[in-house]
Image 1 (cartoon, rainbow, N blue to C red):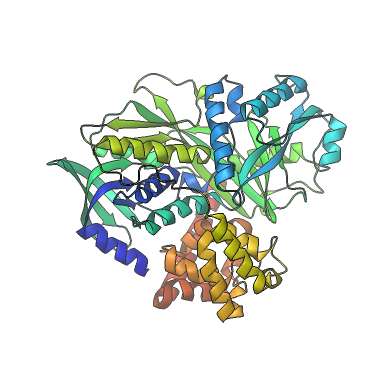
Image 2: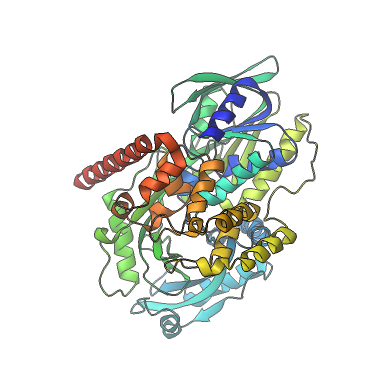
Length: 546
């Protein structure tokens, strides 16, 4: 809480080169890129960082194979290059994973023709991953016994990428990086509108925790509000070439349906891609693709039944999955960039490509669309545009992304080996502590080694099956701006996604985690969280009745 309070004081009192509105992936990489290059940058978000779209993805960083059907080969080429760059830059986090794709009889294309598409995809991807393989129904069954091959014409295996941890964690690490370079960020701070006077922006901001209002001054304003970009542009009277349309996607999290660490890919009953994705001890199933009119989206009973019906049809499980098996849900809208203010969009051809509209006279940027795969390009493009406004970029060529150097990693691994860190791994954990701490925290994991060296109890789990140590919670309290308990349980970690709501609420270590995170405010923060959970449960039940 002290970190947020200090940053709020700086937002009130200082002037910035750039103010970024929105802490999703587009805002996060913009802040990381600019701060690393020496720009004085600030970022605010009306909720928590990565609070909407950027915490509800499929956790895939892929090259856009589905866009090949609409002949968007230039976009696929760009996304494949971005995917490969992410894999090289974040080898511990962005990992190759095999996809087993099943083609049902009567599909719009024969299996071998679709397989040829994966060969082209592999070539466009510069042979960076393992090569695709064509599979007969029998070979599919041999590789993954849970697949229902009764109505299968054939299939194939190919490679793409996924985020080992959750998407929100990946996004937050860019925001933390911006703060490491001197940037200022604060969650739960909402822009009430911005005005440009005498060559600078004055943004009226409200602390959504206290209700206090104050002003933030900046030379440049970047609207990275995700699905709310158009809304804020209306407030600031910004005219843009692009606008957003919205597609709702939902996922259901259930207990692991297969021991194999492959993504199972199908075409759902509506013809769109449908995934069964490994998530540690759980499985993530989805997604839907439903056109909606507003960014506010919820999981409906119709959504749940669509996903359950498809997964039960496509897999041979010991028993069909029901809503009682659902541990958690993910729901978000994909903001799709559409060029032009009028006319009707061809919904099928809309993709996740990003667009940056610039008002050079006002020093204003609006970032539309985008996806995790393309995030480094967004950060680089934003820095180039800001530099074009005449803002000094002291270290224009500085590389602002990627894992720490091999020297730092070698030091971490050496110290971890000396203290037998992997020997302290809890039996419930799915990977060794050395691997997990480095992937999540990079160079900051060295501080955790020292904490564990001083007190081995810091290597113990606070919440059973959560794969988060006491020292991780302590570091989150110091460095990760945890304002509400949900910030930690849902976004800095994926605890809410792999442990049932009831088990979290009754976990013996939950109160201790609150004490570490919030100190004297622990009781109030726990009550706030429990009240929100009760409200969410009541809302879900009312939706089911409707």
